[in-house]
Length: 263
Image (cartoon, rainbow, N blue to C red; front, side, top):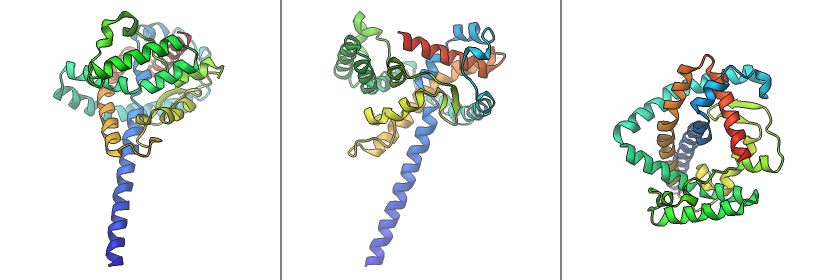
């Protein structure tokens, strides 16, 4: 009887381990579709900055390593995210995709709130809270955005922990391209690692023990579908329009992050 019980115990542990590995894999792939990276792919910046600025404009001492990882990540886009995006776009309408974008944005409210408060931007924190409350209730958990009908709530500059660190004087540091994670500056790394402490939806290994891991897996999968449908068209345009896609994306990313910090 004990042997039979141990058999089921180890089988359950094995299933749990497989589930956690799947969660981690999906989360890592999903990080590559970061919304800041999506926003950084602004075509005007790409055309202006691609070859006008030399490398000493940005800290990129690891450029050789970064270029290798950039190519690997580019391959992961083609193999994983491209089919995901094609499938998602084929089974949804633009209205449905927009609602899912709104929903995911709404769930990231804790990050924006804490970042605003700790940057002493209390009015923005207040507006963020109003926006979240309105969209969560009248907007049905954030799938709709009635807050857009109010000018003070429709275009709140988005804040994150990277901007918070910049506010308190943490230097930008060198540009990095990490496997699966994509473009970052050194300052963004502790910011990314800190996000799960504030918002458990940022990773399947949230700090809240009572969070349903299957729900977190579903959320991470949904986020990949949603963001990949946004990022890939811009990313492919940049690749096709730039003489050197690595330089174009690096410059656009850093310029976009500096612009967000200065807001």
